[in-house]
Length: 238
Ligand SMILES: Nc1ncnc2c1ncn2[C@@H]1O[C@H](COP(=O)(O)OP(=O)(O)O)[C@@H](O)[C@H]1O
Ligand SMILES: [Mg+2]
Image (tube, rainbow, N blue to C red; front, side, top):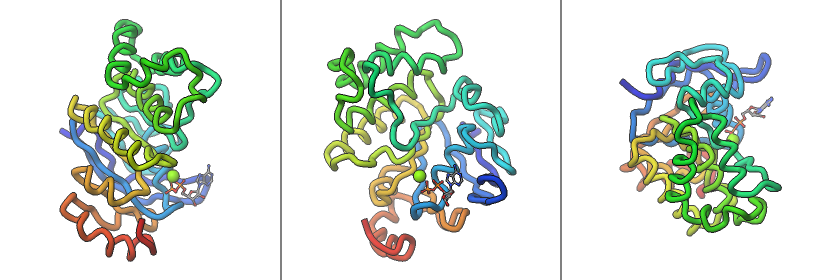
């Protein structure tokens, strides 16, 4: 059984339907990429899954449990976390305090100390800077902090909205190396990315969203032809 199963999902704002009948599923220890032009509804899709907006149709099952329309905090407790676009860390709080905020998503408070220790092991840079203001970290370090905070609740499924945004290429490699580790530990990871080439190479399956639906599904083997695909999908290459 897949960990996350999204079927014919419809969502939008008011009467405006942004995504129509999107379906995909993901299993433990796997990754799915989501690409598509700006404004096509990638963030809307993640928000609809994570409870930020209420879907108007379809179904979302997390480990067999129907989570469609549930509150974001309940969805986190059931095992799904979102790292939103722009990271949204608290720049005036310390790294340690930002991490601790992730504890509110834990089902029970037992194991909190261990969970924080685990994150500091997985992201050594956060350990080094734990008493520094989060706003003083570099972009890549802030992205690692945002991911670590989302992982504190020990999600079965992690959604990431454009994790590479604003990061230098070597730093992006760093973030994706961390994601590889997280996936190897059994987490299912869904990554929305502007860098189609990067995510198509990385993920087992990548959905190309166009006009609110899945236009095609790519595998790493398609990455080689991506330059031509990108021209037709996005109008321009990376
Ligand atoms: N809070 C909102 N209220 C109304 N419309 C929105 C809101 N957020 C996004 N939209 C619209 O929904 C569409 C999809 O946006 P979004 O999901 O952010 O796209 P993407 O992440 O693919 O760039 C766009 O037309 C955008 O203007
Ligand atoms: Mg977006």
